[in-house]
Image 1 (cartoon, rainbow, N blue to C red):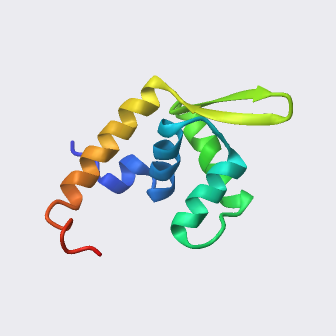
Image 2 (image 1 turned 90 degrees about the vertical axis):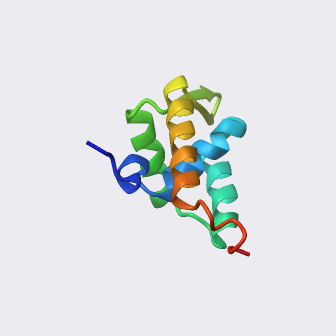
Length: 101
């Protein structure tokens, strides 16, 4: 059975979260700001935190608290999932590289 990209990724937000956490650990507010800039607006806590909770339940990310600050980290499982997502994106957007400006 082949998994549809939308089912595997749970939307672009999950992809962006995993992508950014692959670069470095971040707190929810930092993720919201970075991803919001990419979208052209800010993400609300009601958008980012449910997505973080879902990714944590799937064991794709983990949470480490230091004082009041909570940073999210990519897990090994999250790294594998992100690689699979990159592969899906390459397949979906193959040939569009020169057409998208």
